[in-house]
Image 1 (tube, one colour):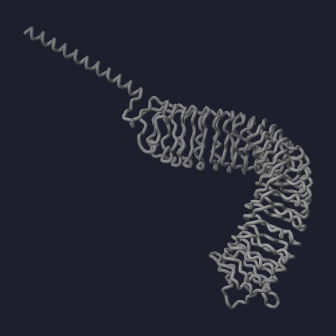
Image 2 (spheres, one colour):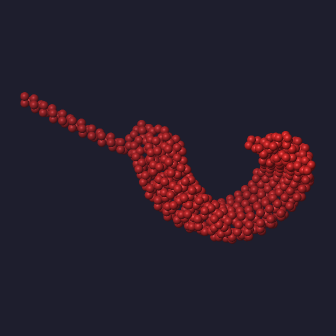
Image 3 (cartoon, helix red, strand yellow):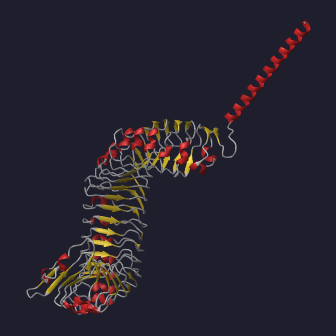
Length: 625
């Protein structure tokens, strides 16, 4: 028995029936002589180890135990499996060194896959001479160390080589270019090679996928890679590559995915890149690239993901970007791009993410984006965009995030909003006017509402405070008047509330203590009156409080959470008094004291005068008698 079935799995339950023929068991295939030729017990939740008795099945052609919880070492007895064509031990917990000697006798082997285990030591060397039929070799996702053996260039039929996700070092052997049938090469992730990409790799003319991401590569991109006419995917991100993007890459007619992000590349995007008609993904972000984006790139018929953020690109985006009807993601943030936002970004109604932040874009948002029902994220903050925000944006069914802060938008927000999935609405630092729409209360999933530093006026709509998911609200720096709606106590998820620098009046609502998670409260620079509600002492999460610059009066409660805050939290409220320092003498209290003292003096003087008159009358009466 191979291990034992863990809880929740009954895929091998028939193995417990001793009366069953071994050829009828799940995962077992026999030939006409009753010899087991295939054993596939993958993904059966098996635990334990692979027993040495597996070597008895000398007729096995296929052995697959992938996706279980098997541990221990790979048994040497497997060397007896000389008829194997497929050996798949992937996605288990095998440990120790991989015994290369067991596969040297497997001269028929076509697939060897030990991906994602805990194997250590050197890569098995000297196996290429014997495994002349091997097409698929996957040793990735382990802890192999040392260098890639030169002998790995001697597999005559190898089509797939994956050594990624190990701890390999040394130089990438240029001799791997002799694998003339190789179609997929994976060497990246966690390996730390010295040197760069061997220019000889340009000889791998059958190569379809080259993945050398995140493996410490240095040097320049070899122009010879432009010869790989069958290359579909090239992944070289997260390295230390320098120099320009070779114009020869424009000759990769089948290239659909190119990721050169997170390197130190300079120069610009070659004008000839528009020839890459099959390109679907282009990632160039976090480099030192610059200059103009070729206008012809907007003509790429299959471009879906275009990410060039954090570079030094200037000038405008291609006017026809998105006209292919397939664009899904655009992220050009943190550049120096100018001009207007292209109108056709969502022509195919597939655009999901639009990120233009931290550039120099100007002009209005195209009205077409207000009808882009596929949109999920809009981040266009820190530009010079102006005009009125298209009303349709607030009704998009899939939109979860809108950040338009630090622009020059004006006009009013629409009276109708129905974006049920919108979780963040940030419009800070614009010139938007009018009343905050009551329809904001329809955004049932809203968690962050930032409307600060605009020109909103009129009263706060109480509907906002029925948003039970709201965690942060900032409406500071506007012209809001009226009172704070008592419904604010319904927002029990609030952790930050900032209504400062407005014209709010009335009292601080009772029931603030219902905001159990609130840790930041700023109501400063308003016209609030009345006292500090005593219930606020029970707001145990409150760590930041600012009530300064109002017209509050009375005694500040001296207990509970309010003990954390000194008089600076209440500055600019002359009619407030504090008793925790032994005094409670506001200006009003002093005035009352003076008034009361004067009243008592006058009363005493009048009484004394009356006594003198009575005594005088009594003296006169005595004289008469």
